[in-house]
Image (tube, rainbow, N blue to C red; front, top):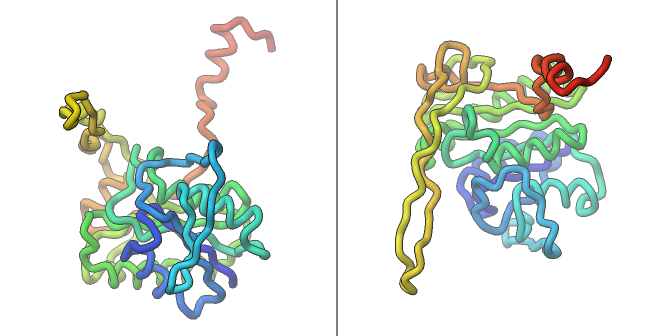
Length: 249
């Protein structure tokens, strides 16, 4: 088993170290993570400048780019083998509902999936790394169960783990993505030079959080596991748009 591990909180993040430690014994592990926190970078690739890869004292390699850069560089030239599994995390905070569109954690796993490799993204529901060791143990247990069933065709899983000491014993639920209300307004401030600057506001509260969603599972102390896909096509609306724009069959 050959495993590539990345994240979006940076190569020094406690969540990354915990996930790597939890995966010891599963096989060969290579860590390639961003040099700095790259939360919210989604699936961005750096195209306007070259990327550099460095090696930290603990053997982790890090890239001066995005989470997607890390996995892309690893799979297209840095590694001399094709990983069997790509893991991302453990993220400092939830990635549920609309968050997945912005998440660098999910993006790193998605990059592996785009290359046809089974991939899993792990996040803790609350920020602060509370009960991180327990979350890592729960991640290991899930990985082992997935491996026991065979990897086969590529898949992409988004896993959110409640910050609890007993998280490994909590029920697991296969969920769908919920939805959030619109984000809060940007926060306006004045720079020391008198310029108006803007901070992105907090994410909106959960809007669709009923039973079956990732929000509902985590709110009820369950581990949420959401299978994802990258096809954004609105298949249901295709016939209506063909008719609206006069496309002949």
